[in-house]
Image (cartoon, rainbow, N blue to C red; front, side, top):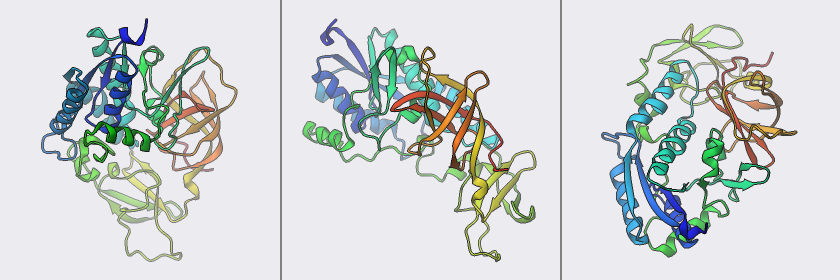
Length: 360
């Protein structure tokens, strides 16, 4: 079956990346249509304006002479992404809603919706690469700075089989250059960064609406003495340096304070001027582990704990979902995604639930 006979649904966001992705697929001979997903009822948010984004997506589709569908996944997003995000915050975790948005919305709800409309394939503007050796594989793309495989580790293999990443061999500057040639006025559109549903508001003030802020002690890790108070554990993350509310306190050393741990049971924030407790090697327990190619075995694995983070040598025990971290990493927090790589292949990953985050 040639490209001409293959129907592709492109997830159109109104941004430069998905717009260029649609253009490239059309140029390659695919039968392309767009689908715009509304995932959040934005109320008064200015930074996350779905109406404006939809208008931009419609303008691109008009330019390309392709149909644009619109679908509202707000209820699914609330139930499968946002409620889990809030639940994890209440546990003292550091959740990453982008990972679960991709898993539950873009590569589940969107995929199922597109297939139900008769499309053969879906495509997105993600910076990721699909390769096929023995099995279909997810790989780091040409643009390693924009690489988004960290957020895609939870993909289902069957969905990956039917997913195209048209930007896989392009650098961001090349994508912008193509957008300029298309004359759509999107090449300088501000990218959506961070968590969309928070918009321009401060993270802490937004979260206070959903996680009841409760004052508690701030304790020095070394002395175990109370040195200040916090206004809610959900406002802090492991390794944080700024905004800890210990300003003006005189100590024997002139060094900043860092968040070392969060004890939800006692509602205590643990801090230190010594960063060494933040560095860890050893065993880390994971949950919700996804290995994209369960049939394959991997002799050498590396792991990263944040988007753009460095890759560290590790071993995974698939029987108990435990990874052994062989190189030191800073600020590993419960709720973070631990994403596994073998060379440029994104093997899969899971969510950190180990509490053993301090050096013995």
